[in-house]
Image (cartoon, rainbow, N blue to C red; front, top):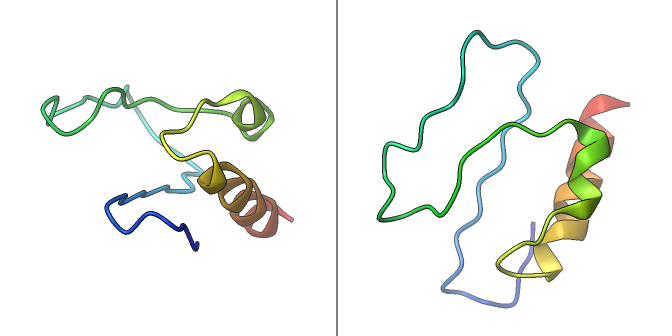
Length: 64
């Protein structure tokens, strides 16, 4: 994923199975941590708007 802001570090994970709820163990680093269904991603407000399309493309490729 290419983003024009070198100070931004974005991580996304495709999870196919999980038991329990995620926990934000580093609240000083993250505003929020939660699960999203692929259909919910298009409505996300990202810290860097350019990263959303890259995230959507990656999920689409991984789930096709």
